[in-house]
Image 1: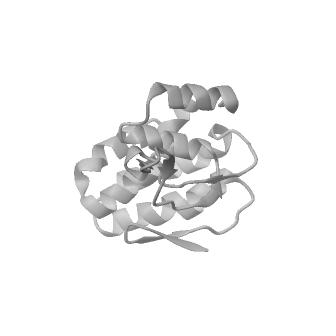
Image 2: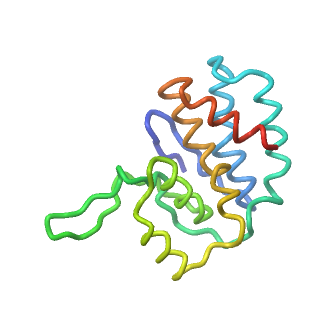
Length: 161
């Protein structure tokens, strides 16, 4: 199944675990595009390769969840009846932490949102260490769509691996 995000098609090929899904369907296509257009250099490719090897030990194992796929405050609106609505989804089965990480990338929601979420469905330890890895995908998309202003954030994250 393919989903459009911006002007990019997202592959949602089923794989046996989330780290494989994230590498093959999310990171590698965007890394290749960024390299092919000159936004990423060979040095960054090597950093991504190192990250790929470590991801199976970094991501916690959970059953997949249906996630929004593009969850940030700009995709949250209130109706005239004051009902909360999330719009513009890029839905897929993935790790639930992806949505929470993305929501924090561009400003986030109020603290009560995250506190309540964690009370209802507690996050596994280490989320704050993983959130930047999840956000590599939207950062790569933004690098490919809007240019190099996102490059330093990407380099900072992958250089940790």
